[in-house]
Amino acid sequence: MHEAARVVYSREQLFALRSAVVFPRDRHQIPPELVRKTRRGCSAGKKRRDKKRCFRPALPTVTMGNVRSLPNKMDELAALTPHQREYMESSVLLFSETWLTQNIPDSTLLLENFHLLRADRTADSDRELSVLQLLSLRMENQELCFPELLNASCKKPTLHWADAVFMNMLLSFISLITTALNLLVIISVSHFRMLQTPTNIFLLSLAVTDFLVGLLVMTATIYLRTSCWYFGDIMCSLYSYVHVIILCSSVAIMVFISADRYVAICDPLHYPTRVTERRAKLWVCLCWLSSVLFTTVILSQDLGHPGKFKLCHGRCFAYPDPIGFIFYLVLTFIVPITVIVVLYMRVFVVAVSQARAMRSHVTAVSVTVTAKKSELKAARTLGVLVVVFLMCYCPYYIFFFINIESNKTWMIALLCYIVYFNSCLNPLIYALFYPWFRKAVKLIVTLQILQPGSCDINIL
Image 1: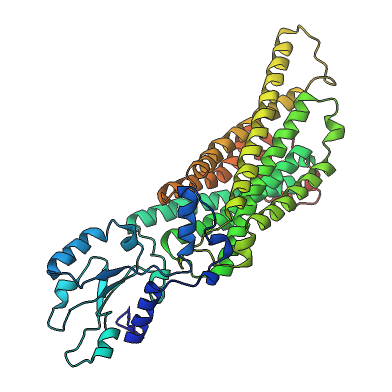
Image 2 (image 1 turned 60 degrees about the vertical axis):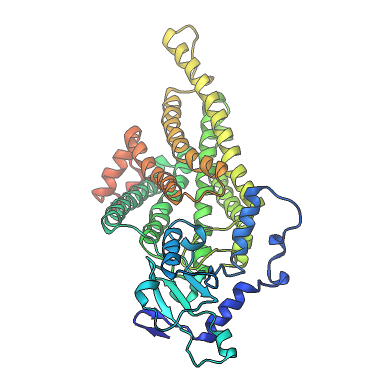
């Protein structure tokens, strides 16, 4: 029952909690993949121990049987609770084998960030009741998402109100700008027929992923910064699923953009036949389909059993299996980044050689044999797009590749914000380097696209 915003448990419930601590869960209640079979390294063993916490409650117990001075013991706990992980992550402290009586005042039993609920041993209790009352003191953490879940609950995000207001306003502004600018890109390429080229089809797909980042991912990030996750395990798994699909699609689209520029610059004679609008649309569809299938595979356990592997209630994280996480890093970071760098290095070499030839007039540069000047300019523009993409995404993936078990939440949050900020930078790059985008935005803002035949306007 709830009393004065505190959860009060009966002695039978406390005794049941004590049993859960003393007697671990049976082996058959732990998933087979978490049972230790062979020797592992430190990081792998630590990860499995953390996952086992989902199936066995970690309830720190303080034994008072040999304690001679209660004030000294409380001073010792006051020094340990802010630093030791066992106490920092706990919502309950149990004092067992105690000799506490009702004559001891509450002021001597207080710890910072915990409040006190007592079930003291009475003088007239018989031997059987005294066994039940070994749990004579319980301290409950006040900053929990779900106080009634004891140590299964996560702590609420702790952020000073001034920092929270500033960060929420900043992220909300970036989210709004990202959504609006990418929506302009989507409308421009979709409405004006002259802009529906193979390259712009890829840019349209990239704008869709950036639009979803601003509309969904950033909005959820703002919410999770200052609040716990109260939408349940299924919605958490669905959000993680969509989040990973968007990231995978962004990386795949950048690979297609690099391949498009490679063919346009290095093999301009066959570019019109190899890269058509129809093929570009087909590749984009395959990109999204493969992202969905890939995400379904690596998050199969989390999707099949929502919330089964989370460490506590109140936070929302994706939990891919170790092999799936390795495949995720390889297929969304190592392979794509390698392909992008190799293709654009080749594009850069060819573009520089052709630019020198055109300046010196040593070679008769033919439009049918070498790349057009407009293609070279497009390659430079998209090169800026790719470089900005690498600058935003590489720190994120490198950090997770090196520190898979890292607990630096502030660093993870910062790298995620940089990745999200890339979705805001892409349309700004279009506005800076593409005159057609500036013209299209002007027509959209002035509502001239509502006029009949506006889709056939010469906007190039």
